[in-house]
Length: 113
Length: 114
Image 1 (cartoon, rainbow over the protein chains, first blue to last red):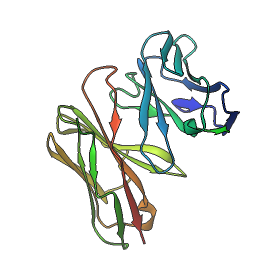
Image 2: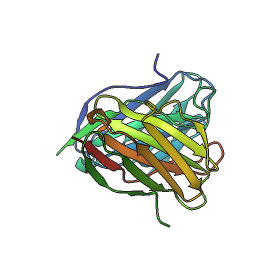
Image 3: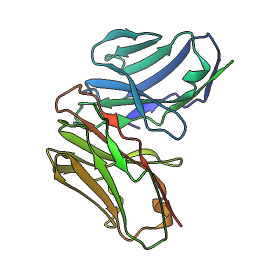
Image 4: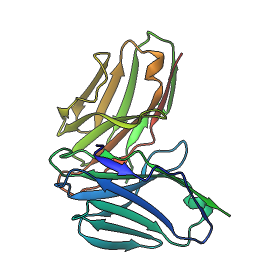
């Protein structure tokens, strides 16, 4: 079992829709979770971090964490073509990952105008 | 504040040559990470340092790869001799110590070995 798994995608949504990106993790001791956005040919850019159960909102982005289910998600409201990118989920702080980030394989999102 | 700085941004070299990639972490950050990204294998952690000391190098693919961090503001990743299968984008990232501190990536070095 991979330490962090993402819905592999690719995911395609129309402009203005809600894009839902999901991630599960196997290390129950993981404490911190992050979503990175990576445009083609660019480096990963941190867009959201979440540490506690529940929702965290930042503009059009909402991260959700459920530690009991070992599940992390990212919702993008009012999706824009500029949101088209690969989204990487990452966790850290667990027994396996420790100080490093463990990344999922990424979900490629396309927002169609 | 300046972000993570990497050089060169692009490197093209011939098989068998030595390649040195450089990284300057964000000032004050305690941790430095080297990653490699390819289409086939995704984003892989090669090695990371805490306070200039290598903590985990289990991701370094083989002895041809070595990394150093002589001081808090500089790290190198060296490949000697380089091979075509080393072609990838190499990222450096840094963060502060402590749970929850966020990791920031540099722009990467695109390495092509012919």
